[in-house]
Amino acid sequence: EVVLTQSPATLSVSPGDRATLSCRASQSVNFNLAWYQQKPGQAPRLLIDGASDRATGIPARFSGSGSETDFTLTINSLQSEDFAVYFCQQYHIWPWTFGQGTKVDNK
Amino acid sequence: QVRLQESGPGLVKPSQTLSLTCTVSGGSISRGGYYWNWIRQRPGKGLEWIGYISHSGNTFYNPSLRSRVTISIGTSDNQFSLNVTSVTAADTAVYYCSRAIGSSPPRYWGQGTLVTVSS
Image (cartoon, rainbow over all chains, first blue to last red; front, side, top):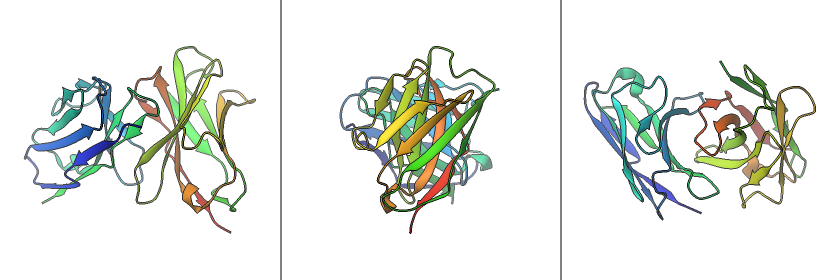
């Protein structure tokens, strides 16, 4: 199965900063990569699919890029409500798999 | 607005069968084009895709769980179900149901239900 490795495990940032999260796949997943945000006690929330397409209702400060094996989620001008865990997920090769997550916390 | 809600026992004994139901409102489960998913999140670990079912009943299971998992369209209106047999403590997790358009990432998720496997 495709292994997704996210880095860093924890990212400490301040409100207003830019956060850059990485996801690397063990083999090419083309553009079939999504990003989710998860807060404690909640289900994951879809942010990005197709590597760079924002889901409906997602603020423009969230952007995704990359293809094949290397992907990035960027959060510009981070807001207080953005402190959460972020997961990447590939849907190119079954079984679909998730990365282990990056926690974005307040510096 | 589509809503999904998981239900089922919160405690299951080892070696028994875990059974969960997902009730869907705001959209028909029999409508074509959607895949209905089960995903779990074990404590301290990441998310794991268990499998999914199409409106016509076609199923795809994670190979790591295939021998123990069954996903089916429920006999009651707008429900689908998950059965996991021969459970162990390693099956303790929050279980989520979700809806996706085809194989695309699911946008709609249930709130999740914690199932603990313990005697």
